[in-house]
Image 1: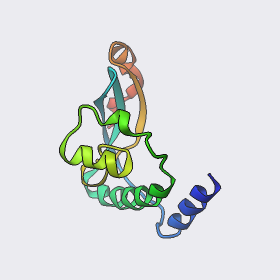
Image 2: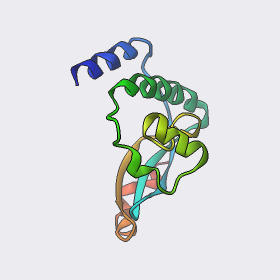
Image 3: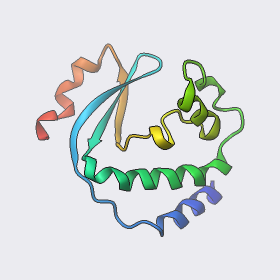
Length: 122
């Protein structure tokens, strides 16, 4: 873990503070009947997130645990499956959409927490 933290600290030196604007919140269905609630970043601000995503993902590769990602391969194909095999995450690299995850909830309770999402703020 210390080596991983050190690698991330070295990466942080390459990036300045990322300033961005959140323009909406969206629901992203995930396996297991979960809904990921996440922010939508203004289009103009997305390249900063993408650049950071790519370097963090590549720097993390030596620290990935072998065999941990096979359980996610089911139901994915093409580039998403290639991403799982490369880095363990289907929506990585070119499929990555800059966002901040607010959390995951079961699809059945998602409507009951709509008032917490604050869509009116955008």
